[in-house]
Image (cartoon, rainbow, N blue to C red):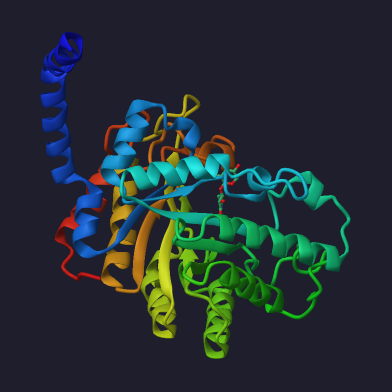
Length: 365
Ligand code: XIL
């Protein structure tokens, strides 16, 4: 009896100062956090994550403090989920869902159909259209079914259009395709119908890059969304990836107009993969520290456009700390430091710009 009594008494005393400081710190920070203001205006603020980092204390604590949504950067893609035909591995995805549920966050799933980054068994499997159709339908049924009720929205189809607005060639479309080669967006429609069967509650998104402003690619996406909506194909939203490297902001002047035309169709808009890579030196540090302010201005403009458009219900960055970002890899080291927190998890001007926008926002969704 005595031991049982003493142990809980001593332990709180030992940790009490740290616990109090920790609580104070958390209180101060949470008063300032993105998610607190996002909650107030009814917007989701998210980050792409890798569950391999959940054991790193600042990674987990900043994530839980600042964001009310997460999306797995890679581990709900085919390579992890179906590493061999008919073998499913939901372990890492389940970790992301468990983290989100423990911290009151929503989960966006990403992605179920993409022409690239597929496992070799699939990409080089020389399957017939009939076989591919069965493989894809089964994958969608298993993955969307597994996460039904726990993943609220999916990037179902990723990057199906090229820069000219034509459908990309892929195993899913026409190489050899799932039986609908040459029939335009019919194969995409089929996939939306399959996913809707697997989880009628999940919001289903088409997601692409460089289609944020008005251009031939976003025109093609708009036309598809309009057609799908008019015929009752279950599309709920369009994801605007928003990768911006080295100040290529050509999409920003027409971002609001593109959002407005999508909103008029009755689809939601999610900013899904925002990052703003800046030129870095050989050591990976900003080549010019003033660029951090230019970067913040871009974050401010994107956040402002989203907050001003009621159909824009999620604002997500592709990662959140410069410690873990795909930009150096994607730009072969030319660009980096594109996220709102630096490599030591300190907030950058970009963070404060988004926080400002959320703090001042009046429209509640
Ligand atoms: C990227 C990941 O960040 C990388 O780690 C991976 O090697 C390749 O994929 N568009 C998308 C994302 O929809 O899935 C991509 O993520 C970035 C571009």
